Length: 111
Ligand SMILES: [Cu+2]
Image (cartoon, rainbow, N blue to C red; front, side, top):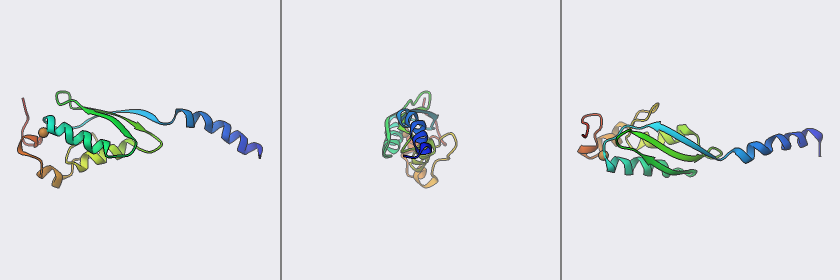
């Protein structure tokens, strides 16, 4: 084996070991428990995302993702596609318009 290849393999080893589980935390708009279900389902529909959770009080979304498979932007896009606004990606308007009345977080807020 070429010495350079050996060196590369050696350098890549820690990367391979430490890649994988990363924690993602972001703000996602929403109102209630059914918003939570949709947000979690959208995130977990991506291969490599697990342990998704969303707190309706703090609007904080958390998940664990495998950084070899998924980028945080992918998760934001999936949540936005379900109609929910995330920090950088605005929720899809068509999906938003199909949400039940109580979930229209842009028009009304739950106590
Ligand atoms: Cu809701």
